[in-house]
Length: 263
Image (cartoon, rainbow, N blue to C red; front, side, top):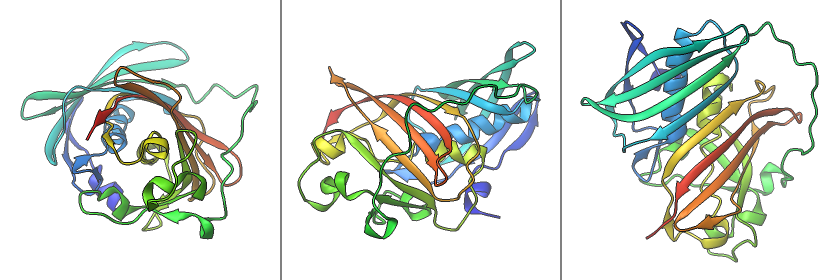
């Protein structure tokens, strides 16, 4: 079993309640990664749903989670021919930490029109990209191989900063795990904050709300990822994420609202 699978394992507690153990193997600055937590909540909703296609999941991070036992409670909110909608709530020690809404599409609905008006990020060859090193407190990169394009990696190397707030590069599991639906929630939230490209490592950027839409399962295990911020005001910023496979298929998109707190 791959580490991600064991670290997202759910125990059925009946009545749409699921037990889980939040691992410290997917942490950023000592905090469990939001995409990793979302993957477990999406997995719980998938357990309750008979419709699994192109899910849209939005999570509000109410309070910081810590490694240890947790419980996820799922309730069905609405159902139609096309969509089933769920609410999921994650609790630790009786305190609600995350609330998520999930919409799942019927697999009977086919894709009539497919049109891309943008493409994958332009990246240097993987061998010319800059690997994100393994660091204390950042166990996420013990498990994921992230290679940043040189155009946005100056903040990590002490070199010149970029002119736009974008981080882009290649992402894959170090242990070779294939990419599936639940792991896309982790992958799309694994890129360092886009504002680091222009601001350097000068701030903590905690997520307030994250919305992820899975579009297609990728056909390659190494993915091309991009995270872009355009507006930062009053200590808040947005970040738009994209995940593509190496054959040019769009796998997932995201929109994140986060704080910008000076260190």
